[in-house]
Image (tube, rainbow, N blue to C red; front, side):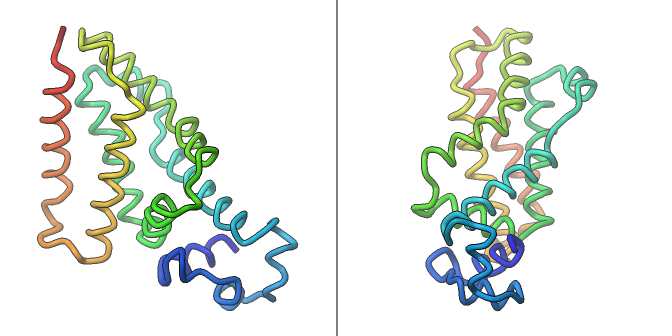
Length: 188
């Protein structure tokens, strides 16, 4: 059911999502939506949260992997590549995620789930930056929010073919991210 919602939003956008299109895509009666979800918006919210959990699982690191990361650049490289590769491998989910995040459905209680999902990344970044003597006053939620949004936009453009020369996009984006990060995190 959620995969059908992903496909409908990927094709028609959030504004073009209807329960009729969803039911046709899912191969179920339109009324069955209300058996599983409180409303159309609940289906859309739960689908977003499902994708969010899926991304969190795809990019998460185990304890040994986290311990092996000695520099901020290594942390960003590992987490960012896992995130980007997930998005590129799942273009419909990427479209859904981007369209949901720029819609009125993206409310504070939904945003809060992102912070929970990615708190491990934020903790790892804090630990590594402190260990390496970088500034202590970095707002990691803001930093990752920016990286997150820019990465989703990049992956969307690559997966839809609207970006010229996508073959270099991964390395170029990561290089720019690292350069900006090093400037921001200058050692104290």
